[in-house]
Length: 403
Image 1 (cartoon, one colour):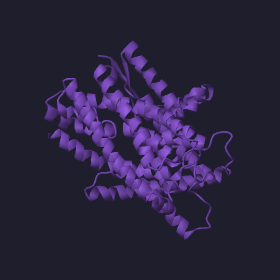
Image 2: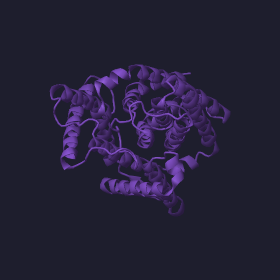
Image 3: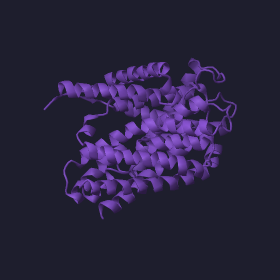
Image 4: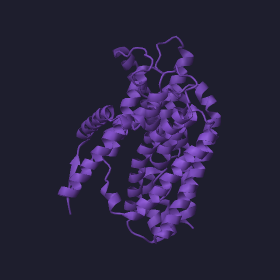
């Protein structure tokens, strides 16, 4: 047995900052990473996870990170997304939202078909297919861990949790890598451009060479932080009320909702007030929160759990990745309109289908920073992932587990 070393939260956060900056430095020097829109925290985070893997392989030292600061950054980020949402965008996003819901359901079913077929092919019980499929991919680590005991009971196997975590881990890595190249293929291959290129960026500031943005100073940042705190505080109260009603939602969902409510109430009641939504300061805080979250998420991956599962996971995950890329290029992109917003959503959906919502947003951020803004994409995809996926996923997974 190796030694486990616990990394406290403050040091985890500090390492996350360092990993993020390392990724930014490498991306600035390696042109191919920029050309394929690989997010900076992904570059740094994957290098960090390889360093953690090296410590495990060479010294049997397992690093365990306290990720509480990371989880708060996720809440902060989705409060930012909420503050950026305008009612006009939500109304305009109605049709894309419905289409994306249907496409997500199709993806859930397809992932489980591939997962079940792969499980049977390699001698696993059919029920374990959900851990090779949507429970670990679209569902992510949390859903895989939650369903593993039921899969283990139904299939009569051991190690279901480890299997689900391994698939979710590899899915997160693939998710961070596929979105940017897909967007480059679609945007540059079809000469696509934003419908409203002068709009402020939802997350992050544009790259060098883009039109100048309005100033960022201590007052604009402080104003943004005030309203973010109000959204998070009210989100905590809403989360408690939802839990008391018997519903289970992650904390970031009510904070996203309250951000939307606060932003639109402020616009209606004080239209002449200094802006908060769609400001460079809010975009900067959004990118900071998302980037640090993703850097910590990737650097804390236990990659050795993937190696222990061997060729089975490699083959099935290769098929899942090919399915996702083909689906977003030849199905999602044309269904969503074959325009610039569809290309941004394709990059995000690639990250979402294989990994997690923050990875999807990071993919879209890298794309929009280079090619231009797409505000509705940043509202539609989180709403689908927050409200629809867990319910649809649970129904499909339960049907397969009970088969």
